[in-house]
Length: 98
Image 1 (cartoon, rainbow, N blue to C red):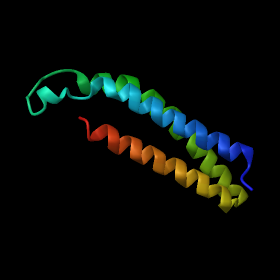
Image 2: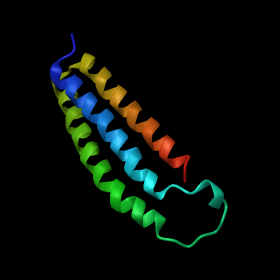
Image 3: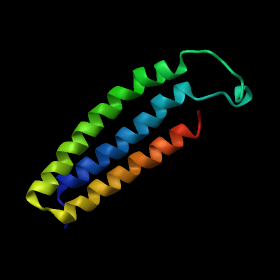
Image 4: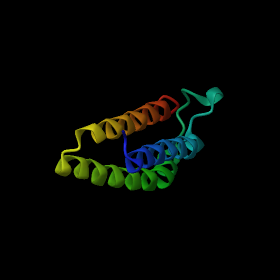
């Protein structure tokens, strides 16, 4: 039976990934403007909003993964891997819209 902590951390990661995509969507290219060579600060706006979210959850997941490895709770590692997959899907979804 999975622990409540692992489920809470997984749900926090899902919420964080959703927040990441919503915040990152502010810098997505407008479909009518795709392919235009615009010199704007969109990458800086993206980084300003997204990097704090990414840093917070990366730190959280690093601690979570370290605890799993130290305590050798390999079944808990499944939740950690699912959380990693959630973040991968969110990043791919974000990058396909730039």
